[in-house]
Amino acid sequence: MRSNLRILALQRESHVARGVPSLSVAARITEMLDYLQYQEKVEYISVDEHAPEVFNALEWADVLIMSKHASLAALALVRQARRTGKKVIYDFDDWIFSFPKYSGGMQHKDKTSLIHEILSHCTHITVANLELQSKLRSLVGDTVLLPNGMWIEKYRPNGIHDLHIPRTNRIVFTNADFIKLNAAKELFLTALQIFFLKHPFLVMDFYGDPFPELVSLPFIHFIHRIPYDQYIRSLASSRYLFAITPLGADEDPEASSFNECKNPFKYLNYAVAGTPGLYSSSPVYKNVIENGKTGLIVQNTLNDWTSALEMFLCEPLLRRQIITQSMADVSSQFHIKAAGDVFLDLLGVS
Image (cartoon, rainbow, N blue to C red; front, side):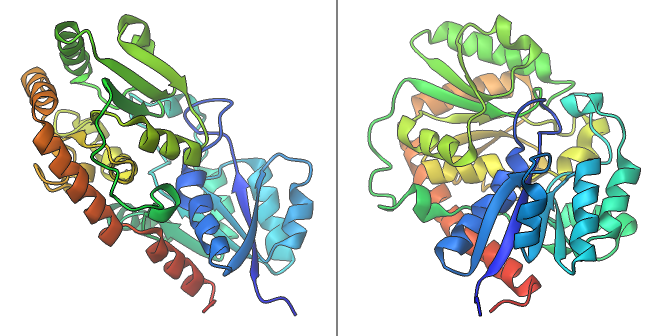
């Protein structure tokens, strides 16, 4: 009799960028399953929802898990899973029933009814944060909080002893979708242009989806999306001076409900990579970052972004302190083990 639970992690296309795989599936699901498989708690395979072999994979599995899937293919798989007595888990890490103006997800046809049909067949619904859990309660009922986390040893097998190796002349900006600002977008872009004009020896590596303003930013070195674990390893090996993370805050009231349901994955990623960060003063970051200790919180104004960029560049001691403190914070508060324990408990596995 086999001892390990068999899990099928369903892949899908990104909701905000056509032709690229979902980052949510990687950050929320397969990273956790990699950890649990390494711990010999589960076996899993990852297959795209449209792949010819996906029904064979489902027959092999005991559990089907998906993240924000909204397709007829996913619905067919969920129905087949329930017909054959399998457990089905649906994970939310974003508010997907509407998108803000800045998002490429606005191009997608509303799929609320299809999502609800998929959810009606699920045995468990998990969510990434308390704000999202509260907002979903009236729509889907009870959910389980599955915390965000990082498998830190996977990317830092030697701990933090090498975090203070001298930095390069490069800054990093990561963004799926379009730039997540409305009212302050031009101010933010102007702050970048002023900063890089003043410091022409600096380069910004941008990982993610192309956005319309990209052509007007000659200091950016564009890197297409790469697989999640490859991306974290690239961050960790690149010795970036620091990272920037813009996100709409009080100045974007029409996007506030959507943004408040987001998750601080960029902070988690950068902390594990040993990269100090500047983050917009949005609740998703203010709620987890201790300003001046684990990161810098920036108001979305021209003056604040310009000042923060200059200060971070000129204060290496502050950057080093943030590297150490943010790494310690993520190690103690956001290790992937916590998510793995919740997941196993949800499925009744000890």
